[in-house]
Image (tube, rainbow, N blue to C red; front, side, top):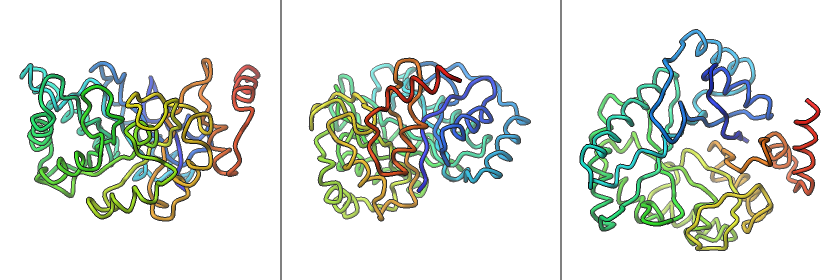
Length: 295
């Protein structure tokens, strides 16, 4: 099983991310190259990158399973302000270059929000932007994330994702990241996850799924709100998420936890342990609190 969580990318860059992932008992991880809400980025220290690669190699983390997430401020769907749309394109290009320098193979991207555009116009804008970003020599694959459908979000169903994939020129350089909370909130019942996978396989192909975000949801099915919950503490439920994680069709796909902190502390060490044991942790909050206060 390839499982990890979101980790920080701070002053130690990729090395700090690896160290944090290992402290959680993970064998993969996901990170932002800087704050997801802004464009401030530190210069990459290649000596720390080399150390990170060595640490991964000696601890069973395959860098080909490590995921980067593009910042939220990128919106390829909205052309109302052409300068902002062009800025999003250029910043995404820079993020791909940074990932290439770090040796990362995949970048997860929110497709974007239509704002005042029609959905058809927004999808065209996304396709146009991606065809500006992705070229023949692009080495990092962009993974479109399935979205909850909050507001004017694009990518809320298989058909919207398929439209983008079909209209990107370099089809071997784009894939998909499934998010269980987003699927639930968009109206996909995780109780019937195999039915969803069969439909996805028929319309797109499961070979396009390169990452799965594992999150429970605070919302009922089809709420279109996108509020994550800890594993087993939401409306999806522990057993349904275990069925997703251990699904044979997705066994080689990295699974990434983006569940909320408990107080000031990350729960990932204990959620990963619970997933490996296939046993719901009824005392997650207490265990997290006790562990970090006693360190």
